[in-house]
Amino acid sequence: MRKFSLLVEWNYRGEPSEQFEHCIIAPATPEDEEHDGENYITGKGVDGFKFSIYDSLAEAILSAHFNPFSIEYNELTDEELKQKDELLSHYTWSYKHGLQKKSE
Image (cartoon, rainbow, N blue to C red):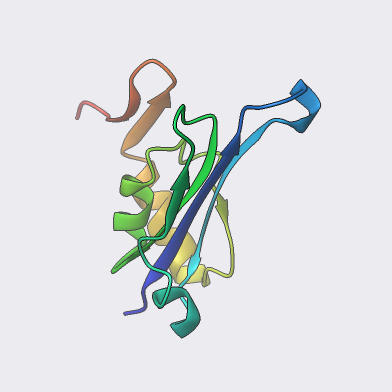
């Protein structure tokens, strides 16, 4: 099973047109693993990034603390896309409550 990299970047400084937040999950490369755990966050948290490697796609998605329906998923196989869709079918997301497991 392959590992997955998770990158979350944000900038809330400057004009609204300059502000952003995004999250990318993709298969990890050997070079990625050298940078596992690298983070940069300003004192007030208005800009920065977090980069981590996870042992599974599900672990990366659930650890992102980001709207999983807005994450950019790169270079996933068809099987991995099915796994992602199956996992997310059991969850909802809201800005108020974050990722929540649906009641069965």
